[in-house]
Amino acid sequence: MIGSDLKFKDQVAIVTGSSSGIGKACAIHLAELGAKVVVNYSSNLEEGEKTLNEIISKGGNAILVKADVSHEEEVKALFNETISKFGRLDIVVSNAGLQKDSSFLEMTLQQWQKVIDVNLTGQFLVCREAARQFVAQEKAATEVSHSELSIGKIILMSSVHDVIPWAGHVNYAASKGGIMMFMKSISQELAPYKIRVNSVSPGAIKTSINKEVWSDPDKYKGLLQLIPYKRIGTPQDVAKAVAWLASDDSDYVNGETLYIDGGMTLYPEFADNG
Ligand code: NAD
Image: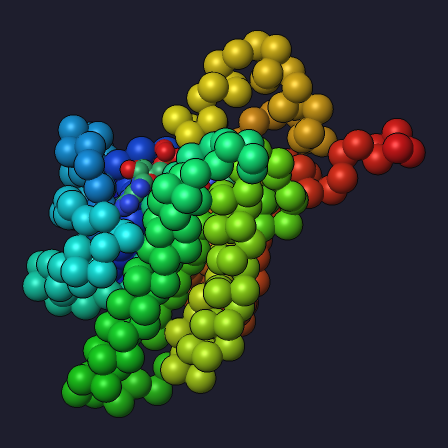
């Protein structure tokens, strides 16, 4: 129940793409830890409302805002609505993402562009707006803060495919590889403002994005071959790591990528000497 450990009391968090999967778990977990949460969805109002209602039924504080992260004006409106409702911003989990899979030979420009627009340009738009807000509210603060702690935390949702090449998904892998350098570069640039930027890179997490794999027993068996820890991850596995990166417990962690993958990046094929 909300209220037992209010790590994020008086803090406001936006979680993009929180109508389902990992984003939903992040929104709920941050609310459980006391944050006021902006639940964002792009098209599925019903799913967005489910996240919102789950937070409210647990005693949390949240609003629901529609915005497509690949559209600049909608991202600006998302942040404006957050500030007009809650007055400030402390945490952004830039999670929204999608796949449009195809062999490279068959991939259309549309499939390429859609994934880059949402997974990479969407991160740019969301992170830029977050950084602008953190800097603006710090400047506007009437009291001089003597705290050494971060004034704003950004967590980007990447993937193990920021380091593992993925045939048949080059648009997705390129977008996630792009997030790695994007995140490190803005982390370097924003650290002097005391804004912390980090990524999490999940391995296989049981959500709708990969249902086709975990719902098929043969494919699921094949997937487990790639996971030394021998289980698929849950959205909550990721949400707990995100909460740590959003908290002051990780205050000296900047520009890092945290792999939450049951060891998927450990070259499991080499476990028996290759
Ligand atoms: P999901 O499909 O359940 O969630 C994706 C969310 O992004 C949805 O809520 C969707 O509505 C939202 N979204 C899509 N396009 C959007 C847009 N233009 N604007 C705003 N929101 C948009 O899948 P998920 O697994 O929860 O994926 C969440 C993130 O985690 C993605 O960035 C994905 O790449 C990443 N990820 C997932 C896995 C996994 O195994 N599930 C592994 C690595 C990384």
